[in-house]
Image 1: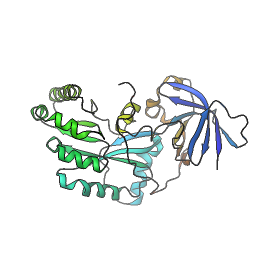
Image 2: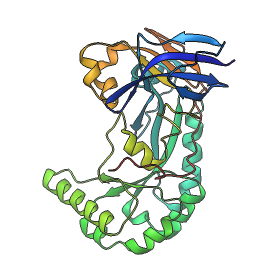
Image 3: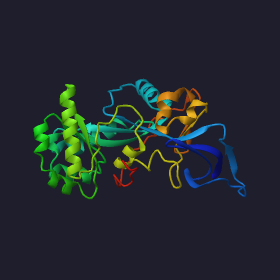
Image 4: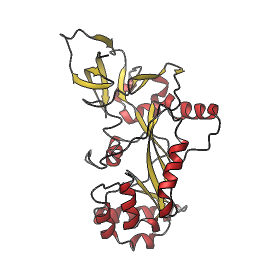
Length: 301
């Protein structure tokens, strides 16, 4: 059924713009100031701030066991924070285990109530042209690279690696294994220098755990605009926040961190999954999100 969400205060970055959304078949069909001649059912969202849903990174799901544990984990860690998609990773120690490990993780996430994106975490030695070919075949949108040797990092055949990554270009994301601050700083500095000089598709820093990922990071991985976007053609997934004087000045990324008590409604692909303190938990409603083109959109950083 088609309907209109009108007078929505849409938060995008650090700006707020009032618009109306024409919703059709669970997607945003049209986005403009108003629909005065339309006869469809309307929902007035003027008393809320409307933001895209949040996407977080969770490097390793715990062994949740029972249905009750799963419900508690997904509810507390994600749904109540306005997160309806999570980026996670599976560890691969040997190239031959890639498909098996991915399949195992997919099986573990069959009952997920939210969508998920699967990346792969590997030791630096496994970053080879052969492995990159297989990861492209599996459509792996993010490769987490463990760094425990600066010398090994410097001696990698980066020219061959860059060529092997093309054209899918899954960004490489550093995971610094050093514990000493000085060693960590040196490793990250070396990483930044190499990926910039060699023009390697990569993130310059580590991903924060269980925090909202910025649009620039989501775009580099290819999650945006499939997720976390309020635009024509995107799925109808959003959060509604109760407004306050101080919330007007805060960026979209910070809404979850500083104003989660103001989060009133979460909609996932057209279905309300949280209203007030009530969560409509739907095990198995989550889907594996396949990324067709990483690094397609950029935000200037």
